[in-house]
Length: 147
Image 1 (spheres, rainbow, N blue to C red):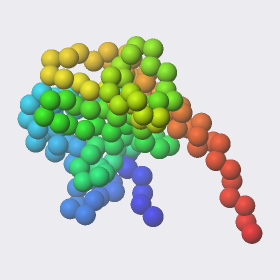
Image 2 (image 1 turned 180 degrees about the vertical axis):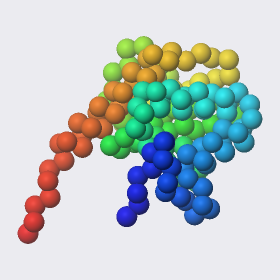
Image 3 (image 1 turned 90 degrees about the vertical axis):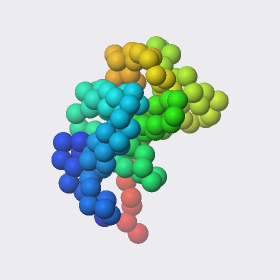
Image 4 (image 1 turned 120 degrees about the vertical axis):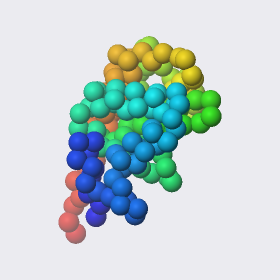
């Protein structure tokens, strides 16, 4: 069974020996442009919103933040940094941060382009709401009954 990895104690390693947090560090550095700066800034805001967030590295190189399930992913493309919330369709977004993947029944995303500002307070509130939703779903899971 795989151990959880927290942002503070990235102890579990992937096949190449690097922890998910170090792999995310590497991605930020490797980008070397506004996308790396933005991914690093977003990561910091997520950590501020939840100091106990678990960082993972999935799907061949996608930073993932989890707490009782996936909160969001941080993908980087040529023109955008995309922050995809796994259960975004179920979250209230009073600040209107979601601007991508709006037609789906589950996910919602925020595409951030070069030069755009982030509403930090609203993003942290969205992260906390995703955590609360994950926690409520975790509490509702029925206990396994022995046969």
